[in-house]
Image (cartoon, rainbow, N blue to C red; front, side, top):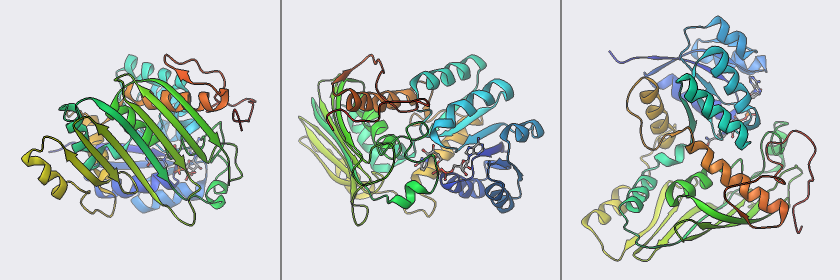
Length: 367
Ligand SMILES: NC(=O)c1ccc[n+]([C@@H]2O[C@H](COP(=O)([O-])OP(=O)(O)OC[C@H]3O[C@@H](n4cnc5c(N)ncnc54)[C@H](O)[C@@H]3O)[C@@H](O)[C@H]2O)c1
């Protein structure tokens, strides 16, 4: 019989709601207990699945030593602190909502601690499981683009003041960051995963429409180590509604464009050396199969559970160092936006306020 993983969940907010729906449906897991500082939220979640509710996650874990894996879906700036306390004091493997942490030093500590203790920490980057993305990754690995020229991501989304006012952590430098760190995390992970390491970045950021600490619009450029250039355009100020998200990869032998809200649709796929598979990809991999819970989320969590239950690791899963790569890029872009200078790797962070709890200079360079 297949192993059923015993799970606990920390944080019963928006992201966790999606997790809960999957936990209810997937036979690979059983949710035993949930914790949220807000007892109403914890009770509500617990009732839905017949789990126990707690307001203190440490008490929950003391009372449920049978829990094997803990899923963390609290505000981003708290991920590392909670992860470290569970790794060290309770010795459980973890599922963490993205990003692993806002600070590179903290992220490294989580990765190092998990490695030393022989535990697993998986960060959720579900867009890697989109079917068009899988095909694009395969084409890049097969060298089908030839010399890479340009890779760009842009997303123009609509978030209004109510969204930022819905929780005190949203849009703060200490616990969230702006459109780049919160919404753009997935797109930056995608660029780094597909195109590889970056040598230098330059960015400009502003807070144009929202009342919040962090930025609501950012533009940035990348010089990849492989010689290609890249750009990011990110905003939550599209009005009156979400516009679109897009990823473009151009090489000497072909071009691919992905679109859709979560880079889940194939818009363009053309190579100078066409293969019989190209027509199949354009026809059968142009989008994810429809799934009320989200195809990529389900595929990602199924891969996570298989791996945590002792199965093989899907190469799309983000574990260890891999979760730090996109965080480094995000920090580099903020460092550039705040210093007014291009930033190169290896990184030295001085001006970026992301993840910092103390005082900081809240002015974007050249604003
Ligand atoms: N993968 C994705 O596409 C995706 C989508 C949305 C959010 N997220 C991530 O999920 C995380 C949560 O975001 P959200 O939108 O669900 O936030 P939210 O504010 O809706 O929920 C967070 C919950 O955590 C609880 N909480 C805070 N501190 C806690 C603590 N110490 N112990 C227990 N509970 C605590 C809060 O009370 C709240 O209920 C963020 O890191 C965000 O980046 C990921």
